[in-house]
Length: 134
Image (tube, rainbow, N blue to C red; front, side, top):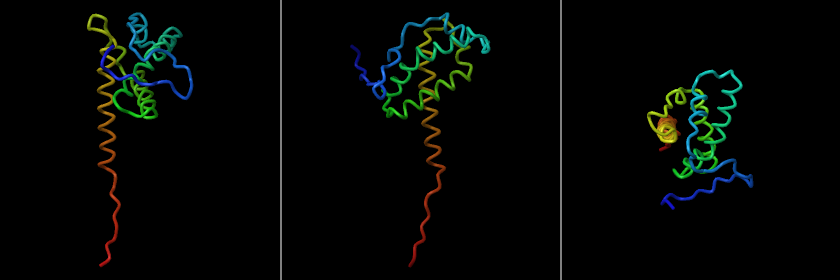
């Protein structure tokens, strides 16, 4: 067993939908998602299966980074929105390496950017001004 911590990713008594471990890549599924033909039924089915397959591993990865479960759920959803709206699936190529490596790198970058946005928001927040009477 690896040295990573195990994270309980079961939510509110629900049976988890999939394993928190990244499974072997089904390149036919990934490539059909990245073809850019969003309106076809087969592409929609492939995208749905991609999200079902990778939601739990992405969520568990975020939890292992120390995020609370509600924050990890939000970040997971935001990551998938970014994934589905961006061009990452078009960049996936079996000749360039494993999809989970691409996904993990994208997720690390996403979390770093998310942390930067949060820190920037805190820096831009106006401090409360108080009047000092003498």
